Figure (cartoon, rainbow, N blue to C red):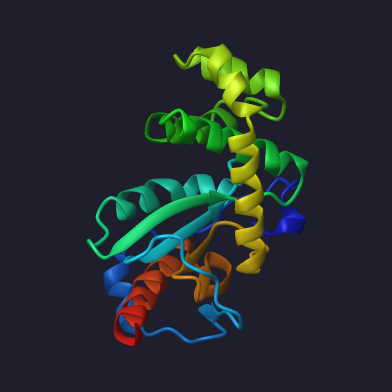
Length: 213
């Protein structure tokens, strides 16, 4: 979903889930077509590891559809790869959802709640665009509402949102979901042709980083 399209009602079409990323990676990938090499590298945030960053937005239907496959992949990455999620903050609504993510992270609830947020928005059609609605959602799902509200408004969460915004700008991300690799490359479904192929491109780029250091 491109930055300019975030408020439109989009229909996800043809997310290929058949072939594995490893199998698709044999087809080869072309710089400028399947992935982009950053003119100015971004410092990686995980020393000693090859960092893969997913840029996402809870309100994006493509991110929602991609999440099960990406989550399964992230749990099987090699020991030299570090995966993390970074919410984009294109607009005020994106920033609200970024605060939701980082509040969950601060409370160590991402594993338990991440998929539930997607389901609330895309399957249950809940409006999680205001703090009161978000706190109510957190409380309904067993979190301490008062603690969550305090965390949501905390300096630490605000700082994380600013850092996330700076990182997405450094990567020149203009749509989600996108995948950044070691501060040097990024790919996406719109570049590679599908989110599944973007994941295969990510595996290819991890191999490039291994070879080039």
